[in-house]
Length: 402
Image (cartoon, rainbow, N blue to C red; front, side, top):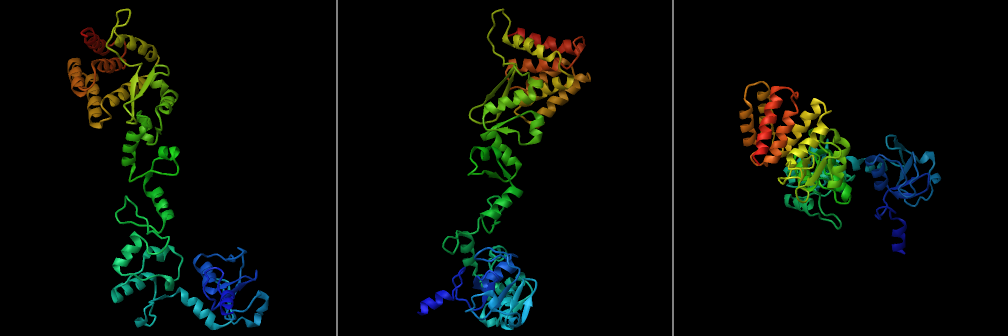
């Protein structure tokens, strides 16, 4: 019988014995702690049983009450409008509002009260060599009396491994030293706002997102694992990256056909996922073609068909992109390349000095690729100009020596 009575007087939410009952217009009864948590900590007025919105609820020491209408207005002695709670006794009100107080739970302090949680935590740390988990205090939606006090070692265990069944500790951000979060939800928000996620990996497998500390680390990942568009305008946009080389090829033809020529672009990958390489106008071989012309000349002739109607800006972009690629996107070397071209155009250096600098800069580049660079450079000058003829002559001599 006693067990049956206990069941009847147990809270349907937390299963604790009801000392002060909360009953709403929907006639569902729960303990005052569960109801007050909903109203004070969650700022919600839903019934915890049927989810009905109840503007008001009654807290009473009459735990046998079964209907909201059984309590008349004359039974109400005080109310707290902020939470929409009516009380049938002042003790009910006092016990309820005490749940919000920052009181030291240790008996030797005789429930000393503090203005805020920070001061309470400082007190228990200095006076009792104990401390609260601030993550639980801020996110758990628990009253102070429900929070645990820990020694330093216990707190470390709690945060690292957990101390309850089903709780495995507060997750750590692997990029921010010592920064932990209440749950995976808060960690996810932090990662999304403060760090970088690979959208390509997310497209491949959304169940296993890959995060990186900053964009520099993400960009290194892009180069190692995916296919980057290395045209400067796309590099500036930062996230023009593809899962496979076919998508990259489609992008290059669609977005950069004016630079490379829609039908003359050959895109290849240097191994598995180490970024894209561009071989423009079909690449250059060292073998002879049927007419006796080297493929380098043939490619340049085909390139001239594309270039003859190009604007100066397109020709310049083509030259710069080829140089960037041959220099493995080294910014200092590319700046030297640009400075050399400017010096030549201003007559500060001769074409021989230009060629010597090119050979030094592009020492790891084949002669055929160097010929393509010189060809692109000559295209920047008017066909009848001295500089066009000088660069073309140097280029022709270089190819005739092969």
